Amino acid sequence: MSTETASAAEQVAVPPPAGWEEARSRVYAVGLAAALPAVGRPLAETDGHTLAEPLTTRTDLPAFPTSSVDGWAVRGDGPWRVVGRVLAGGSPAPLADDGTTVEIATGAMVPEGVTAILRVEESTRTADGRVAGTPRPTPEWREPGEEARAGEELLPAGTPVDPAVIGLAASCGHDTLRVRRSPRAALLVFGDELLTSGPPAAGRVRDALGPAVPAWLRRYGCQVRPADVVGPVADTLPAHVAALRAALATADLVCTTGGTMHGPVDHLHPTLEALGADYVVNTVAVRPGFPMLLARLVDPDGRVRFVAGLPGNPQSAIVALVSLVAPLLAGLQGRPMPVLPHATLADAVPGRGDHTHLALVRLDRAAGTAHPVRHVGSAMLRGLAGADGFAVIRPGTTGEPGARVPVVPLPLLPGERSCP
Image (cartoon, rainbow, N blue to C red):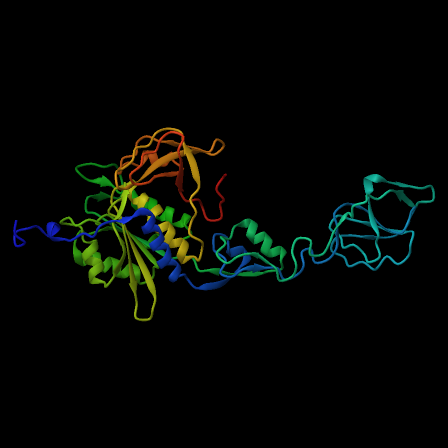
């Protein structure tokens, strides 16, 4: 067939797909190079953000010796005459004389001159009201700097902020933290065949990605407003260009659904060309999800924005999210490249030739095993709803029962920790 009579789709020269691991590394690197600026936030507003600088302590931890028990702070040998009481929050006078004691509460500052603390339950009183007993040989107080010394780095930059980090920062004396600004994301849904309400009918299917993808993006730490979800966008090039240009005006990342191939109504590639984007990744050797892409736009002022083209098939779109969007967002937030956990396959998983196979699995975390699930067609979501992640079956291999394989976990809410 001559080039004059060939269809537009047949004339498009599609580059060879990137390997799955190579694609993840490539998008992480461009994300890290465009890491979002640091901002100061009150502690209560930092959950789910990322430390933009190391967390250090402003004082020794603890800052002063504190009693670890309720009891008696004594000086010298007993029995001891009671000369006062020390409660948490006070700054006591020194214990100056041998043979004296002050009652002390857990967490209270230990007075200067104290030689031991006698636990209240191990003490007795003499007839004349003095305190008697034998203190334990190990000191019953916490020494200054026992947990950390002033200025010590406790956590590196790039650490996700969760409730434990917030509490640690507060104990160190911080009121605010320098964190990476959360990525702003938008979603454009392409496809005239999509319904946004009611059941599928008359050749039209219900859009499942418009409601779901923003929730996934939020779990990766993005801000997504209802107004940032647009679609279905009309299947014309001018409509695609206008919608993408508008979304890029405020978003750091715009995800699109569908249109990643070169069919008669697939306008994403010409839209990216019209806007001057360059490809970071254009198709990935992975199944499902092969026609995914990530493109980058750089403004004259140096501002960088990204477009993630997700396939229209729902499970394929989620594969694109975990494959390209997750490492990109890790880079943008200044976090380390996600390290994949491993699990042992409980059942066989087929390979996909020279492509990586991402196979939906349910994890038995107690046993450390991964169990393939059913209903895993690229257009299906039933299997995804019961899965914990994707087992990675590398090109040219099959997943045999008992094999240890990497697992790409599905994202949790910001600040949540995955179970071991």
